[in-house]
Image (cartoon, rainbow, N blue to C red; front, side, top):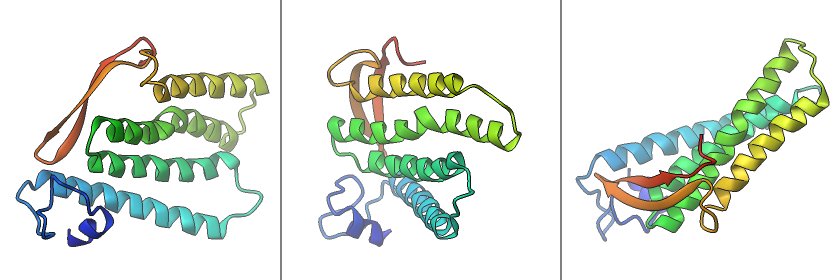
Length: 168
């Protein structure tokens, strides 16, 4: 756990000023878990990048990248010290949340040789983009979240939100 203090030196909830681990426990384990998942996904993405060939599906490549980005968002959320940082981390998580499912579906279509029109792919990606745009404008509009707050329980950051009309 001490290596996390080197990566995230400003963590107030989990470490005392001298870098000693606090007794909160749950937050430390969560940070270790999500940091581990992020490192594993980053390592696998780097291995994939080294093995990459032009004949690989662009959808498959995007899946590797989006999973890594979403895992980074979870690490950032646990490290958030205020609502602004928590919302920014949530936006990073939603990059994966909005685009992973359609990309996986298009990958399955490609692997199963299911034919579809380009307008179907365009419509799916435009819908996902619209949802993501409503999420990243949370501070200016109330389309995705009407109100947002943050609490920290046992060292785990929770975003308290009142959902807007664009949240499914």
